[in-house]
Amino acid sequence: MVLCVTIVLGDGCTIFSTNGSTASYFEYHRFYDFRNIQTSRTAQSTYSDASLFPASKIVNNASWTDDWSIRVQSKGAANDHALPMQYTSSNVNIHNSTDASRDPTTYLTLSTNRQQSSQQAGELDYKLTNLSHASVRVLGRVRGAPGAAAGIFTYWNDTTESDIEILSRDPATSIHYSNQPTTTDSGATVPGSTWNVSVPSGAAWTSWNVHRLDWIPRQSAWYVNGLQMASTVVNVPRSPSMLILNMWSNGDAWSGVMAVGAAAELQIQWIEVVFNASSEAFTPSPSPSKPVVCSVDKVVGIPVVSEGVVSAWDHGTLMMWLSLSLTTFWSLV
Image (cartoon, rainbow, N blue to C red; front, side, top):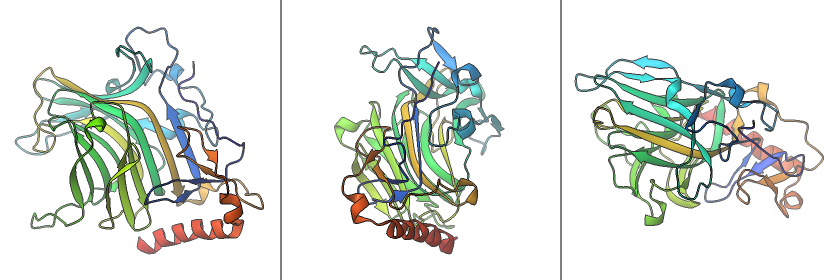
């Protein structure tokens, strides 16, 4: 039973390129596919069932569980008006689709549900905590009751964080983008740090759309279906970070209050990430005399050799660019 399949076209992409105003080059590529998983289960399959997670054909043959972990944690109420919250493995599942089209037949679900006096939530944490820059793409949608927050973000601490957030109480075309911190000690908004963006009507978060967060040296940008929604040079992360996806609520002012017995879900077809890493533990394979540059923007999940890029960029130039990226990163830490 195969959960996720990643194919690196050309048997040797050594550099991965992205497009847009934040066009960049990265050393590593990952693609996690939750579509059309073959399972005999009629309702859902829980992430904690190890049989669903065999070795995946990823860049370094790492398995899914080598790359991701489920958060299992209890958090007390943030204040007198909030609820205690529990992140549980039962809130991370593979669901069979109930869509009329049945295309895809399955997807990953992170859910949150309101108990009488607490809230349960679901979160996936990327195990690599040393991402130095990244482009993160998620084909997903949010469904369910008001009073919940879906998050796709890079994280080092509460003041070094770059976010995509969807509030289930908001209009379906409203998405929040931010680089933390977004407020000063006095409570004033930091200019250029946060946006509540109205996306095109065809990109409502209740429907399947590709949400993208780019973090490059000195700039962050956010996209929906390839269209840039926001960009900033303010509070761009400067520390090695991890990647987090979650669906939560604590009854506080940000997430809102969910009715007892209600639930909401972040549903995900696939996750694609290209990134650089700040540790020597993730040194890429020896490069050929000329690098093989592959675009991740032409075919979903399959890097495609970029015509003309190899001849335009000699090996030394590309290595200099990647070195500059890491040097810039560490000079900012």
